Image (cartoon, rainbow, N blue to C red; front, side, top):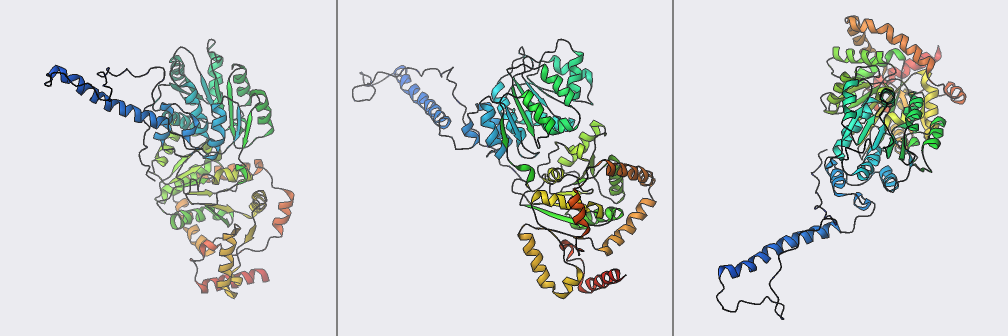
Length: 562
């Protein structure tokens, strides 16, 4: 969506440097009018003082208007009411922000007041601006002799790079200098970054702590503003030791901010040690899904996923929509990328072990909409924010409800609609039940073909009402579609040596993934065994004719008879 250029506020008058006084006006007559010349025929020299006050009066009028605009009563709850300095406020407006998000509205006043804050917020909630804007407001101007004054620690290179870009955008009208220290980059170039005495450092903990251990005279005592971004990911990725080492080198007078989607026990202990009487902000975002997000759960066998994915991408998802596909391993990322390429579909990809430069290129192409498909693993997707994402496909069902919410929370934001497509095998059914218990959402199977044949209009009406009431419907893929697409997929794989070479690594990696993923609850495992048989998913109602539905119903009766 195009964003209209922001209207900039008039430049604020600096009370420390008042404007030069206007040239003194001629003396005023008692009537309030200037005294006229006594000779009745004023010379050119006599007329000059009369013109100059008029010109200066216009300038004074402009300054008065600017002062009035600056002193205008701010709109309650907006960025105008936060007391931001002119260069920071202009950066906010230039970025296109008009109204603060809930996390910004709650966190920013506390941060601007100098308090430590622990905030529960997901990617896409506006959390990055919630800590960047107060940081820019606090630091204000470049101070090359002060040392590092702000430190932002991110779990991944992608998130750190993204935060750097965001800092440059919001700080467009500031002269603050920012440096990036991340793994995968040249050590020499990063030493040069530190030699420039940046005001702000954005870093991943592993590389930053490594550099600290190599440079004896690099002090962090000057740091007055520290941010632990996506702190739960920082801990889950094994950075706890590095974080504690960095924490011990910081000044006790610093302001510390912690942003996290969840608060595991280890992180809570870290927050107690690193934050002083923190203000805790909890928006209850970890159990909510956007009401504008449509959920579609398809039951199928593991070997049918390739056919189902190709059908979705070709027939159900518009070529104008951007889709993020989550898979369990890097081998599946590469496999799907090659399969798409063989099918004439171009995709971007990202996984943890991928070369950093290649990842950056792939993500940039997706952001620029040069590709419409992005295949990722969960590790690579941490902190990756695509504002205008339309769809998410869960190739493998996420084992934890919060991971599901984190994935699908990337779509249907800021008033946009979106869809999350999820493949569900028989082994995944307990996870599906756990998810809906967590969400407190009713779950029901799609009506069977026999039920549709008895009362198609009534069943369709019932389905529509269930969806309108916020219930989730799960159902099967059309078997005829899967069979047709599966034949095509087998033909493509058999003719591509790269795909053949990846089949075994994919199978081995998936077995390891199944062994290491979390287990569903015992109650959901028990309930999954008693679930009724589901019919065709409602999204495919337009695919089959009534006679085909009759044939499927007959086939299902035969199966139950056997």
